[in-house]
Length: 302
Ligand code: CP
View (tube, protein in one colour):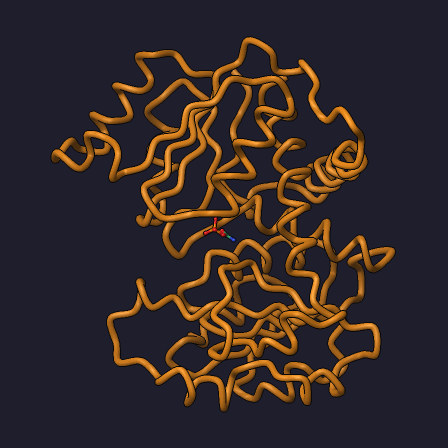
């Protein structure tokens, strides 16, 4: 039984490079008139989303279909979870129908790992709580490599709600394996000091201008109101100190790219002028999501 994909932390640099190489191949397929193959014909992939998603759920489904697999999408509201069924019972029920892989998003950190320990089916983590979002980090790396020859030696500023961000964690794990200089920046309540020791090459600052200075990549993060229990900044207060506006761009390298995993909150963490500017690669990230997820499904299922 091939392994699934639970996180970036345990992947080797070689495994990441191999996945990105296949994703590069699938990038070219996106531009062909016929995008569909039958590589995964006969395979059944279950998309199990206990949290809202637009990009990840849709792109996994498109990726699976482009590889010829059959897909079923289940959301918590449309399933028996809404009738009080436990996670274990839901998962055993689905497993009894013998899918070939389960793609899972859950609000609880570690939920896909729990599933992987109990089911003899490859599990792909589509985002677990504040822990990891591995395919997001892979598609982010692919997007950076569309604009740079190598990740080695780059300076990447990740700015916003770091504390609650599985995207930040997966990106830190991935980028640190490639010798990237990573600056994490956010307001003190959203930037725990212990994050500085999570991987080599990571430093923290509360000063957004310092974080952006000489950056090759600015990665903005959404304030995850759904995961915060403490009092929040108002949108305008937050934007004043940690929102990305055009005046910040001049502090970075001239060829800087601006990234955001989405969904974006215009006027809170990023201005519309930046989100819609030539520097923004936000929609390229979305496009690369399909290619990366095709590469991941191929590695796990073919
Ligand atoms: N980036 C991301 O995970 O977006 P969705 O929540 O829309 O899937």
